[in-house]
Amino acid sequence: MRLWCASTAALVLPCSAFAQSPAPTTVQPAYDYSIANPVAGRWHYAPTTTGSAASFGDGAARPLLTLTCVRSIRRISIARPALGAAPYLMVWTSAERRNVPASFNPATGLISADLGAYDRLFDSLAFSRGRLAIGPSNAGALVAPVWPDIIRVIEDCRS
Image 1 (cartoon, rainbow, N blue to C red):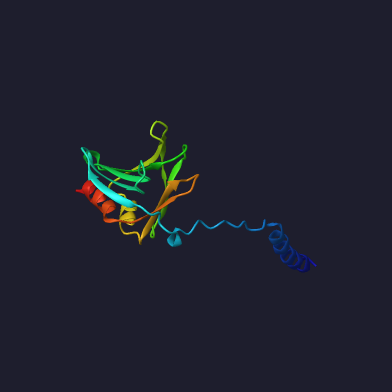
Image 2: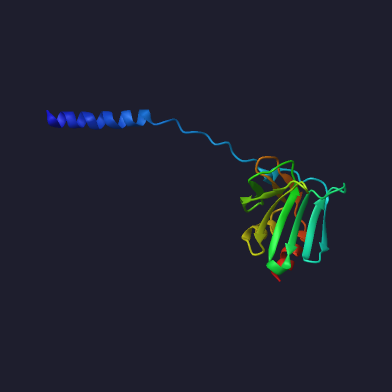
């Protein structure tokens, strides 16, 4: 009798435990930037008093994206215009997607992330296949083409 109870319990217990588990939640896939068309525009490289900068824009008043090197401290800032604060700046390349802690400056209207020049994210930016996407974590990202100007800023900060 005990054997029968134990075998019955073994059959019922897994079924009831399985039946009580919640249904798996589906996670929405992230936007596929690998097929997104880059915004029309040009990169512009310029040396600065502290290092160098590469700005991407469409010819309008202010840049849509800027990478700035401060050579003395070996840091590179990624900045773009934003309407408000966001905890992170999402950076997408063909090899990597990362949310980088960001800060918002209301005086300039820019959200920016500051990283060491040797961060592997910059290697991913330099070798991204055709495009990169950067934007506040709570808003849409700017998809820009990859040009050698980006690599020049990275190399300026590393040398």
